[in-house]
Length: 437
Ligand SMILES: Cc1ncc(C[n+]2csc(CCOP(=O)(O)OP(=O)(O)O)c2C)c(N)n1
Ligand SMILES: [Mg+2]
Image (cartoon, rainbow, N blue to C red; front, side, top):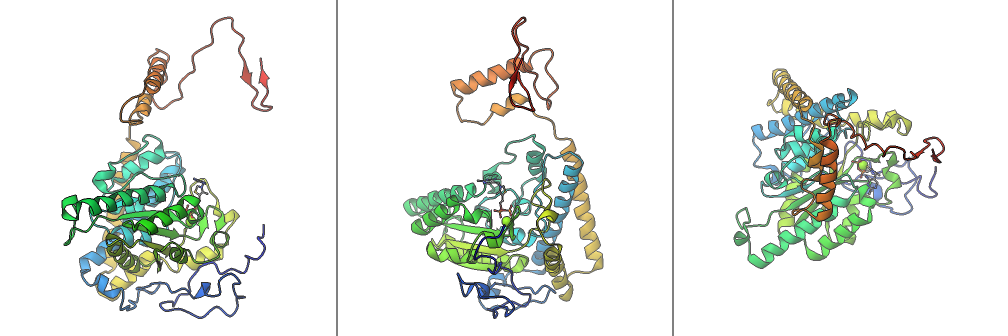
């Protein structure tokens, strides 16, 4: 279906040589809503062929990085991708109920997550496996969620990494509320007294990940406003991967997402999300600003190379040429090429890294298959800090069913109690929806 007046809108893609504002593509008609939309500068420090592009604003933010640090960024991305492939394969074999692939978004996640301090807090969406890896979350716990054997999975406080959020955009409000609390604590008790890190006892920052589709949610825009008005120490990290399931970015917004920041009094930055150095530098700067009470909206321009989830078939709605174009901007090849230019990486190191990632994936697969099915009674754990009467009654009812000799093995559906003898059994006809006897 065509939406009148939006078909000529620039879709937020960037040309390959973009470091400074570029002229509008003369082949495209002007965008009526926003004449500058196609001229938005994108922060980029690595060209797609791996050349380092200098940038006086952002270069100083990376001055401390050693060769080992740079190799570490590549390692994180390679491992994130390999684990993602393994999880996709596990889903195809029926071992996971679903998988949300991060393929294409490794640089956005690794660069931003590696900018964080240990005491910072992350609120992820459902695709942030690379960020989870960087925060030290055991990825078998992530697989457990998608296998349906766990509702949570990890200790959010230990890793500074909250539970995955499936309700699109909900985590952006949660993160902002959390950051408001942290900010207030520091205002009331003062930096070091409140346990702040860094030289000046700066507050921990909160980073929240969300997508281009989520940016249309009311919750997200309310969160922007709260953060702006209350100067919350938060960084909004939007991975604009160009698609919200089958809805393209041009159906989501008439202006580049980062520009919305200005309406809420936030800083707004657009970064090449397939450039791990740029996402690291931009996030480091945004974290510094957040700790001083200046929240930032970062739009990381990237691309979802795979399906939305394993339940999706993108060939039904997306042009294969677009996917091919984005594969030429691959973040891992780009960083590997950069490190080769600098003599920090070669074929042998590449083979070793692949072998390490394969071994990690194999261990993860074994551990995933060994995950025990939980007792159904654990469904009632951690609902509230203290039990309620209703919860206790529900737990007792389920415990009763499962304690019967005919109870199925854990993991199978409970058998409903049989109706009393002689009663009329009613059921619903699945075809007509009518009640039948
Ligand atoms: C409140 C809400 N509405 C709708 C959905 C269904 N849904 C799941 S993912 C998704 C698309 C989200 O796209 P985006 O925010 O761009 O994130 P991406 O999946 O691209 O990472 C939608 C509409 C949902 N989970 N929650
Ligand atoms: Mg998206």
